Length: 214
Ligand code: TYD
View 1 (cartoon, rainbow, N blue to C red):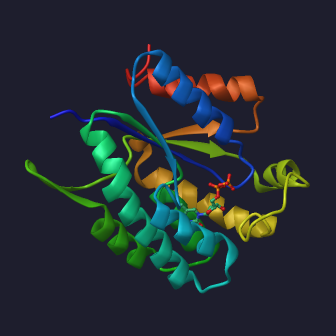
View 2: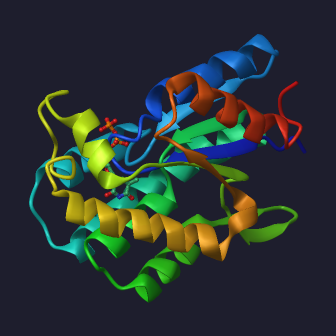
């Protein structure tokens, strides 16, 4: 059975991941690979509705966590798993590390509960057995919160998270660091304060290193 490649992209708001996700999609396609480009929260009609609520409405951290995992369940079932089963490359702008970083780190929600939800929501049952789906690679655009804030300033009307102070993003960043420390082999940490071309070369190298691009 064909099995695709699942790559997620993470970082605090303002870390500058978007152009590199598009660049990777183009590069994979140029090498003849089918690419599904998607994002979280979102990626399905239902999950995009949940995204709107999470990004714009005030709610407690548990409600936020439950909504992002509900969106993730739908997204996995409707989009990610079918694409991987077709052997495609799935490029996902944020995944569960963002929940650990934002709801866990930023908002201080219970990490044990997040780990339970992760197991529950990401369990995939295939004919050959059940397992917990994780990205094959997570590219973490790591940037100091004060630099990210300068980049975001005046860019556009901020959503609920983008409007948070640098102290919030310091906690989010620490949340990413903890996820990195727990599974360093899954991650490529890219120093996002470098100029765009250098960041792109680092992104490309992390994928080539795994033999997925030439
Ligand atoms: P982002 O991915 O930065 O998209 P855009 O570039 O359109 O702003 O925005 C998504 C926001 O959602 C971001 O602030 C992080 C937040 N988020 C969570 O709080 N928890 C999650 O589980 C996910 C996936 C995202």
